[in-house]
Length: 266
Image (cartoon, rainbow, N blue to C red):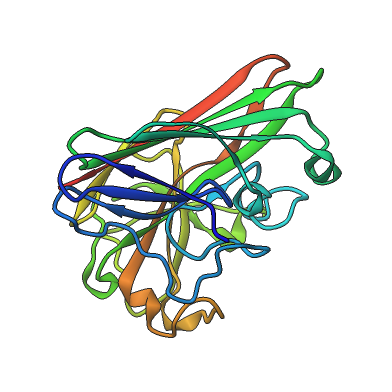
């Protein structure tokens, strides 16, 4: 049986959070418009991560490290710590399973809050080092925004240095973005470094914290097939992933590292 928590605020606003991955799979604004895309072929109880919504890549982005792709945060069941009508907190702590992959003692807390008007959603991640030595991490909020990908442009990244995600673990040389980003006909999967805090889509605005300087922009187009995504599913979303990738976050013993971002419906 699926374990979920639902948040509500003004109007028809609603957020559905799966405890598996502390994963948001739906956010409707006060007008009842769905702002996220979750694949109709997604699985929700593991072991695979949920396709769509907002997966949390933690404590590793992609293959930048020795863990499985995007770390274990998105495929772990998080404990519901506290919840109200419009706010919920989830906790993931080290266990025998996590220490077999990542040998550190930690406590990660995700706070998800829907604004009173239902038109803004904030996700906050705190990572406490409970160990006796520092540890490094990278992370991302791998958000699938509902969008007409074939007719969407992103204009806020003009001149920003970027690389293809596939080059992350190579001796890469960044290039500078020229013109608006489009998602057709070619696959887009790039990491943009030191990006503006505000990124705009036709339906919403993303505001990132200073601890999320990077942004992954992804859409697979028809070039990349996945068993849990319809063949034309790519047309219905673009991924803008607020992230900490280029430079690892270093968390000292007893200290807590924090990052957050807020999405606001237009």
